Length: 555
Image (cartoon, rainbow, N blue to C red):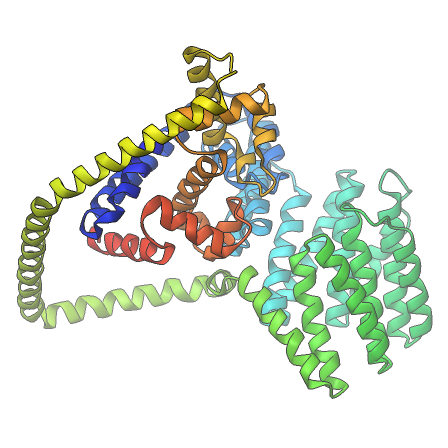
């Protein structure tokens, strides 16, 4: 794998040879990774359902392993059979809800999350049981769409789903989910100015006894009382409830969203009494906490309100600053096609049928013209391709020998210098050749399979710990066997993973190049671009353009 990239690098001396060798390298890499995925699929295929479900949940809760979660859960859901037992069918339904969670909170793909939840609801209804997570995630899906499109109909659907999730959670004796559902229901009812609509739910919820989720239950009870005070225009009392909410939560990853919610609602309450300056202070406090814990959705909403409040105070420069931050976050988190896909699913289906009829009529009317143009285009394409092929072959014949000799001279010189340097540097090393090869195989295995290599904090010391060797030996083996240092070798594998993700349009189409670079471990765009150019001979933009051209040729 590494040797193919080295070939691509050596071909950099001649641009005409770079593309074919790059395609060969990419084909080999993708084939290798596909084989790896197939091997993993075969391994998972024989696992029992309970094992797949628990592993799928574990991957689901790991932000770094959404692909593993989807692969594991897909193996399970593909086993569905209507003749399964009730327990087995409910496990399948739960697997679909875990998939929905990944699509919803890892990829922000509302359409796929929605389809998974519909399938989960169908299976669970046939099994005779309501799963609270189905309605909880449906509510969060509808709520996200409603918030982003300012559509009250979807916000109303979200509120209905949260109320269903609350009742199902209580029936299932799951106070944790009940807390999540009721907290969301309060927020949605406030947004709709329909707090009275959840009065029945409040009467049920306030009777719940404190358990392991005591602080969350108290938080929601204070939340309801605060919104009730706002409805009665008693803003001071509402602020006191929000302060109590904030004080019962610890500032850690488990509780940080609740603290942000309390501060955010304090800001909105201040704004109701036109105290925008105090509202801004609370919003900035919320934004600071959101940035500390990298809560992108919290930062998105907070920047929007900061822009609005500064605008109301007439401070247009500050308003524009936060407006730009809001738009940048929104562009990162929201795929507009995903947002619209559920809302327009039925419409697009009807439109597709109409377009099909129109296409048939147009085809009948212009068949001869289309055939003639098609033949002409084919002739032009074939002629152009043959001309390019002839030109490439001529250029290849003229330059190959010169390029080969030049590369051989460079390689000999580099090898000589490397041997001289390594002979001095590692003259006291006790590793023999077999030990070096075995250790390098371990290193390659880690770099090929361990997701931690895509962390920005992955170091040579951490690699040494994983392969159970010392720092000096690992450094020596990398230098002597691969012919490059640790950072260069690590970047090779990261660039290969970046190429895979660029090709994987199903899961990564909405990610920018910067996001892909960060996801595979690069700390800056410039470092990523230099590494990509060095190891592939192309810039990422050139690579994407070539990939698109190849896709069009396949069509």
